Length: 133
Image (cartoon, rainbow, N blue to C red; front, side, top):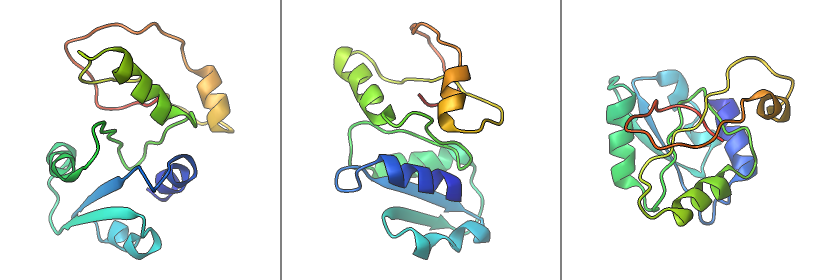
């Protein structure tokens, strides 16, 4: 989670973007709260799993576009917020975007991005809740 938060801090504008995190039953993560005062933390003492935790956070979010990340995922392109916004602005019927998950160890995010498959976008009726541009 530390890597993800540090990466996000470099590519978001905290004056207009919010980061909400639900800690569900992880005392190790609770120790990070004071180190990241720009994050809106929700702490639940028992584990409830990812989908219920995201449901709690989405209800608290103030924005119009929500980007969900697992604690071990991060965007590999610095303009991912603009990319996501542009997709929604181009298609008012768009509800969910699922991006390719890039797996493996790379020297940098740039190397990971360059090794990812360049796929065309397409409509789908389902999605895997992972992956970022």
